[in-house]
Length: 158
Image (tube, rainbow, N blue to C red; front, side, top):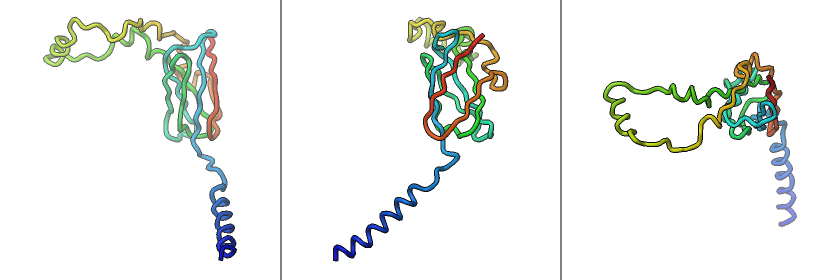
């Protein structure tokens, strides 16, 4: 009886393995990580955005933290890349939306005398880079994304 079970089990296991090891999906997502530098130094803050040329799913953006970024689940194929740091510009942070009227008065009263939660100077997270890098069509940066994990280090120049 055990020989009979063995004869039934072996072909079943082979069939399962063959089906599970079929061809890979050509549109499997890509994970890309790397470091962004400008003038030889890591950019402390900003974003990196991949714009797939296939038009699949829009743009894929990651935060820059001490020069490092990770973009997950991006579609495979060629992508144009943009890097921006203006989102960390202290001047832009001062221009945040405020409420007027009673709502604004209530918020001002509630926050009166409070210090910002951090004593870190926001300027330490901002490095001005050439404006062309924020436009994927003008940045000159592109990457062929393949399925799985990969590294793409970006060195920005003047």
